[in-house]
Length: 639
Image 1: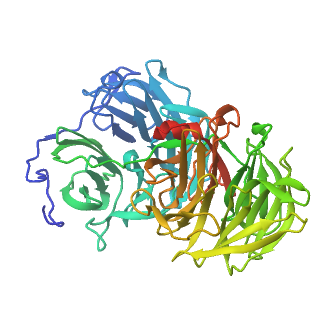
Image 2: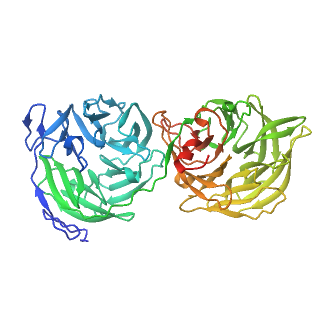
């Protein structure tokens, strides 16, 4: 590799292979007039199309100021003109259709349209922002949802859901606002790695996680001296297999960086002093040859470089399943929603309820459509679980029990069997200093235990009773893990208790109060389970029983057999549902699942998860619903 300060003019060498060719600036033709444009016709934006034949052999997509956007052939002949005054462009395509995004400069609005044999579709406009849009770029996630990033002046940015695959939606949805560097003008996305690249003119190139559920964090790719090898500035960028090229207009050079493992390294610099204000570049690679088009004040400059490369491994993404329903947002701001429990209506399963915590305020009750039915503002409830068959006075009732962090207590609620209405019974004091997680266990004598944990790692198992009309809890067992726990779930059928040690593992032990507290490893954190280990629940059906765990560290859900040897069946994520306009799921704390037939799309049961970031629009946290049938299909499970 050459030294970083090595500069080459018109005789670039990469990896000791010679430059293949330098081509003069080519002209672009205007099919609307039948005339050929000169080499000095202004070009606003240019993108190479894929190397394989698409859209009748078109090779480039070109935007001309005050004229329009056209597909261009190898010889420079234009076709399929979309008349108008457009700015920066980006696209996604297959063999028969192209999805285009651009900026209508006259209206200062981003728009989406498609091109196929039928011609250009009617554009779909995004609302006009209160800032100037500098550029747009597409991102297509693993579930084929199409998003559009807007990069605006003075650090403004936004992400919008605009379509599915190559089909725009009628009403684009704003997903989130982005705080970008103030001197940013260009962007590009690598779909396979969920990476958004943004330039900061005098600082360098930053990579952000393009996922709409991700934190707005960035990592440096190529920095301006003295922090990196770039001489003066960074403008437009183009991704190629195994690398990135970009313009340094203040230094009149093209910069070439190669991706090696998880790092980006300076490869070569091409000096272009004869090009005036060369800011934009588009590149494509075929047969170890990189073809570039560089836009400058006097036209388009074309050159070809040798580019031997090894294809980078793509992100080994997990299946992404669309959420099918969501609840109304919880009342409290910030990190508030935490843990759901599913109560089964025995006679009419479709009238079952989701009972969930607002850990800043109380207990919430939702129906299977996500409508809020009740709000009980009783304090900071963290985790909740439900069981049937609790003896209360002379009656048998259903109960929900939650960990109350205001009082370090077990907060007990009655559930009316006929309509699912929830009401308070009372609280049971515990010896916990900082109560946190909780789950219930019901043995074959129908005794119900509440198993609560403290942030310091201690667990407390209380036998609940109320036969005399007085609520009581008798401490029957204590045990502990070494670090902070939270999630737990008990298998009543096998008398097994599963607990999560957030940064370590999932453990199993006997659930009976008089049994040994010896713990057995189920799954340690690592490649399959990413800390924090959060909520967990059991899907119990005739043909299989599965443990579902929130792997919060990578926003996924792990599925294991609930019996030894705890076979790992895979993991999945919950993503955007473009058709129903429901956002995806991230930073999940609690979850619950049930195998009962609840009707309709919930015929194989339902998984309910807390969503740490409620997008589209950005609102208070809520809970998302997923049919278990989607998990069965994605992971090839028994049902």
